[in-house]
Length: 196
Length: 177
Image 1 (cartoon, rainbow over the protein chains, first blue to last red):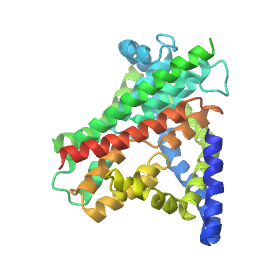
Image 2 (image 1 turned 90 degrees about the horizontal axis):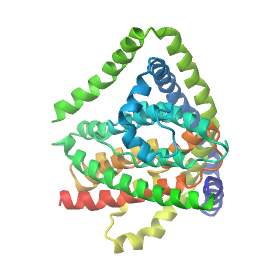
Image 3 (image 1 turned 120 degrees about the vertical axis):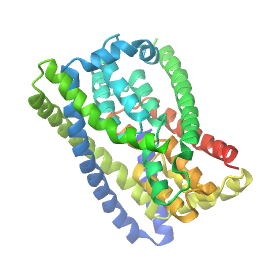
């Protein structure tokens, strides 16, 4: 599906640009986009390297295992395919808590470590497992307790009450998460029926 | 309330860092070597993600610059009027799943233009805060471990983004009208 979206985005852009007479702009956009990709990646590099370093210490010290054991009743319900006490659980948990606190850039490295651990459990390395899809569903819906970035921007533009959107954000993201988990359940059910 | 939140976001990370280091030390983990080893993992991960990000950013930037995004918006206009959805919010709703920085720029722009305490300003902030960059998350997470077939993850992500957009509209209209 990503194949189709990617292809469609580019082909449609070129056709529209031709009609609009904006071929020059699209020409530039291609390389501008590539450059943005590199810039974003370098922005990620520092944060990823730092948090993955910290997480490696936490892992070796047994912190993640402890955390996973503590909250396994909740997570094992969300991830029934992951064995109890598996290191993936600890990473999934830290990923979820960082997301809750609106620490997006701390959440990504932990999510990536979780993904690596889930990949170790994956019999078919090219295809995503239901557990991986659930992890993504939680991440893309992202329940947010404190939308830090938005509060900061509202402050910057002189809002009378910068935090008044905390409630609406929490409700909206909670709703989106319920929808995501519901859809995830449904697809998981169909997935298991199809593969026997 | 705000003091508490800014206090928490100020202290959360330093406290976490100190806790992990001290706890690791107490469990006789060689903290420096372990940190460097983990950070090296971060480096390889970033390099694995890079091609995926370039591919995605190229497509998105081309789509915006070609005018295709504007066409899509004017095509949707009658439907939006019918549903009482302000058309100013549509670029944000459409770009949110595709680009985090792009949609953040739009949300910031809306807040600057209409004011943080206007309906559109509040709606933009809520929408930006309650949804996530599905395409980016998918690209990065699956790219990092070499998954080719994303199964149903994209579908679930995009539908939940739509849900987030609708919930934001309904909740902000209800709470702040």
